[in-house]
Length: 451
Length: 113
Image 1 (cartoon, each protein chain N blue to C red):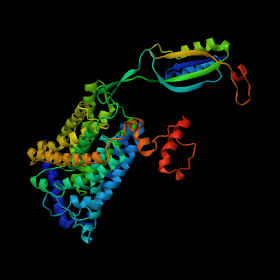
Image 2: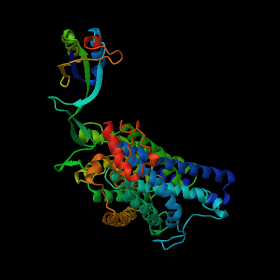
Image 3: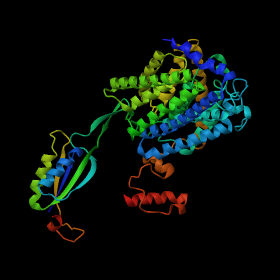
Image 4: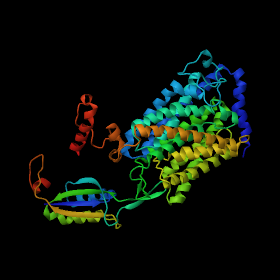
């Protein structure tokens, strides 16, 4: 089962070191183009998250979901430029916390093969990592959907992506203490997905379930509004994962990138098939939303070890993740943690599994060290998320009022709907002259008069 | 003049429309509605849990006809919309006081033909 691994390890890491001396301008350009393409693919994942979350929630909250996703990717890239990149990659530091200063800049060397063994330039490095940062924060969005106050979410996600994600990320990818300890997380089952997942868990728990999710203590499902949109989102995420994992090779190395794309796709496929089988067995009918979550489960699961596990291992990791995500969704529903899109089950449960699986399947990787990493990231992220959400709850409040939740956050938070349901259009109120204080009452008059 | 109002299964619309055409109904209106009768909705599954959908999608087909045509119109509707399974719907007949053709101002039965 592990026969591919030595070849892979050689293919992945040795050439980068060897090429450092002899990388040609052509190779440098090819590497850099591949890494920029991967940055673009990871960017597409944000469209995937936006459509998936829109599809799995109700139509009355779609504008709100899309607004949050639009905000996160934008603020994520800005804060990563301001402080995130230098917090996550501080250079030489004590292994626990370091900061290389505000802003991004590079000298001439950052644009030559001397910067990263010819894998990419400084600017590519920043952009690729910035897309990752925004991914971690956007995971929270789905779990807290349909009930969190927009400004409260914006404050949380800004601080989470600007400070928490890069700080804990530095422990591993920045060359910190976990990296020294031999922890392995190839593309972020833990660093990205379970960090986002822990934040999602704390947020969903502190908010409580959506109105109507539990009627007299009994589970009453709240179906999503648009399965085609959810499917589009998951397929976009799978596409984006080719960049997420493929780019984590950190060069265009033919052996490494092609192998990683294969393990990634095998795990995604195995996750889907396992989740289909599991949901079919559990509920007597095949559940599309579970099958889609199964794809994501396999992808999250393989992300920690896509470079160091074998072909068969990647299928096993995907199968276990597919079963795990179905069980996890049902478990969190039972304990009344309401996660409309299954973000906690996909990113946290399968992120932990994927990280531990490296310890089980990869040679030279210690299960205990993998467990240490999982616990360290879990404990720290939970404490940080509790602190952030706690302060926000005490000062700004976390949850919209009952009336707004029932009417929908699209109207309550934004005064606009995602879909024209016959309420908008037709009568111009001279939008440019309507002050925000008047907008609400005028909009409600408009809605009433046209009904 | 009577209004015949039929609540039918959505996929039966084409059959009902053709049947009405055969018995001479010249116009009709259709509305998407939701509702339930004795069958009380049905069960659906979402992410491992069952829930009851009370209001099922139906179509409401309305046609206004002269008194003499009521019998053949209701029969045509009942026969064309029938599947024999629960949830086939219901037909209501109610009196209509008057009708006006907007374009010409014709009244009563003349507005229907």
